[in-house]
Image 1 (cartoon, rainbow, N blue to C red):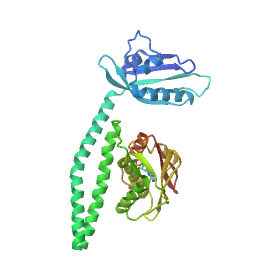
Image 2 (image 1 turned 135 degrees about the vertical axis):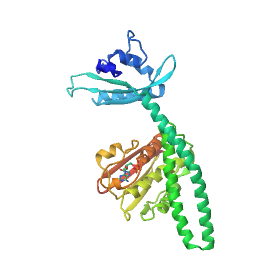
Image 3 (image 1 turned 135 degrees about the horizontal axis):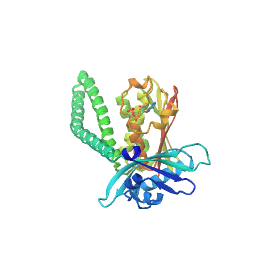
Image 4 (image 1 turned 180 degrees about the vertical axis):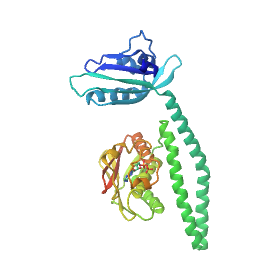
Length: 340
Ligand code: ADP
């Protein structure tokens, strides 16, 4: 009664035979009547097309490794053909390997998803509005700076390059917020073109040095590597990794960038000798809004979205991104892109 009152559906599945027993509420959440049969396959067919495979894989994976299941997916509810978002949680209630009962609950999270979507549309709109005047500001500051250089006015040159640095920092933040709202709506559009990765790395390093001048950034000699990818988005990944390396390490500590390739992939790495990351934090760094909470990081500002965006961008390129790190010794962030 409590579960019904809370609108929670329950289900049990025999992991060996895959016999599935949904409660009446679970059937209703998938759009079935109480008297209708609903097998696991019937439920899966209601899941919106592009999510179906990942739901199936998550269930199979949880059963295979006797792990926990947590997925969020949209299901199609006729006749309105609108999406209902469900969160599905499950697991085995004992570690006894002979127990095959895999069970869990289902909750309707449509309203929460709609709120998330509204929030991310709002962030997208605000950041778009902020970006326009800031872009104009950046152009005028650059013009003024050039003019001051011609006049040999050293005070103005110094002051204007400080303004330019801050404007660039702000534009990077706004671009991240803009991309966040796109990524949350599942809309990272790639505009692929052929470009030289070594050249892009050089440009990003120059830009990072302009903003955080105190670090010593070195690049291991890197052959000419042409890739077919979205140049602006890969630039954003590099900017994020390099500015994190500078942010989370001491001022004089070196940062090394490396770029290598084999026949099918290109690997870029950014290594710092800074504070490092704990094993527990490493697992979660690429999720939205996650920030490691230590005495050292609480003084450093950030939104916790940079690495999430990096991972979404790299995933959209069919690549991989990961981190290797040791607390107190430093971190190395690497990403791989398919060359073809
Ligand atoms: P932000 O830096 O804005 O908080 P990110 O998504 O870029 O957001 O990074 C998420 C978290 O990962 C950071 O808050 C920090 O705790 C950790 N992190 C990222 N890069 C490094 C690094 N090079 N060294 C140590 N910790 C890092």
